[in-house]
Image (tube, rainbow over all chains, first blue to last red; front, side, top):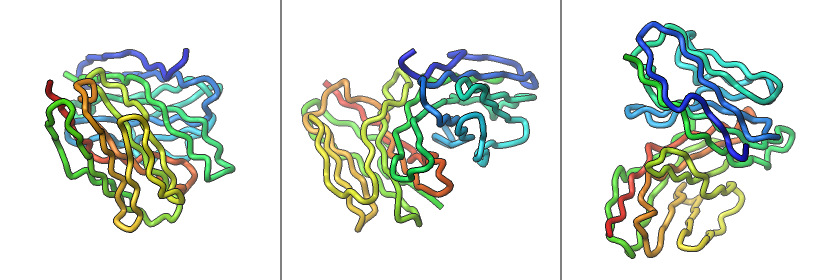
Length: 119
Length: 116
């Protein structure tokens, strides 16, 4: 597709369940980012992928959160044993990042997000 | 550490008024990038502009203009002759070249309401 695609659009689940959120970036974009948007915290960085590697996981709030990326394309964010404070919109972004050239910070293009509600 | 401050939480204007959204940033890097994104009620973050720290030229794109001033660490956004469709939350964001990951640090956003 032309843009970043995220699924599901909405997810409602019970506290304690595991959830998987999917992101399909723009074709050819090597960099992929996950962010979280919540009322109290605003937009927060979670994790960054360059290809299939995640050199920066510093934003993941706890060890219940993990993410992977395969084939340099689709990424999955997994939250285990969900808690009510995990309720938020999870946004994925991709960019055509050239890590060799620090002057080529291309803009990140965002998907529509997954609205996660933990009951 | 990076920080972006958007002091205006909400702004309400009447159509055709000009409106300026303020953004002040903090970073220790000499090379960094500034962005503005628009988030309409539909929820998707829409990229508007990117500037790097070496280019202080102001930019105009239609009714939008941006004023980048390193001396005051500000990157303000002006909408001229606002329209109802401009109603959205606007985010200012900063990324530096530290670690080469270019992750974005966002401000809290400014909710702009343009009334007919």
